[in-house]
Image (cartoon, rainbow, N blue to C red; front, side, top):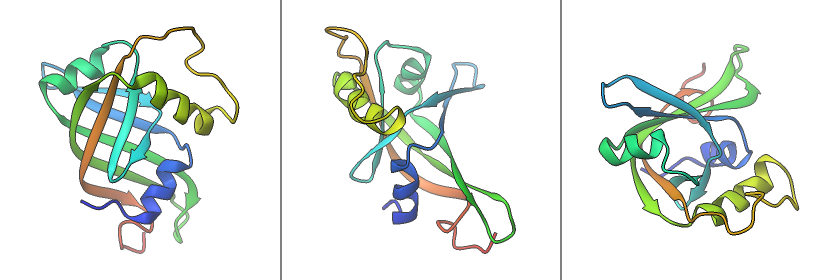
Length: 141
């Protein structure tokens, strides 16, 4: 699906992003990630092959929750939940993390803060559905 411009603006704002993957037993695993865009795909970088990477390699179903710093006309905090399927791309994590650090930490920062970081992994998420509270829902709440 094409991600609405209002959601793209939210993503590029550096808002908190919670990535939900599924553990082997079906229980949710939630982690805070830096999220960005590559066309209409969400991208996140990871240096180690941690649980979220392993979970996606086994089961691609994910959700990403984004919290806005705005309020709806009813005074509710706006947020978006993006549901979709993810895939893991090997390599490219340091370059992506450097780009996202400029948004999440600030201009001129060096990230990861090490020499010769491992190539890591990039999660690429194709969004199938968007829910939440905000202009992206088409509802007044």
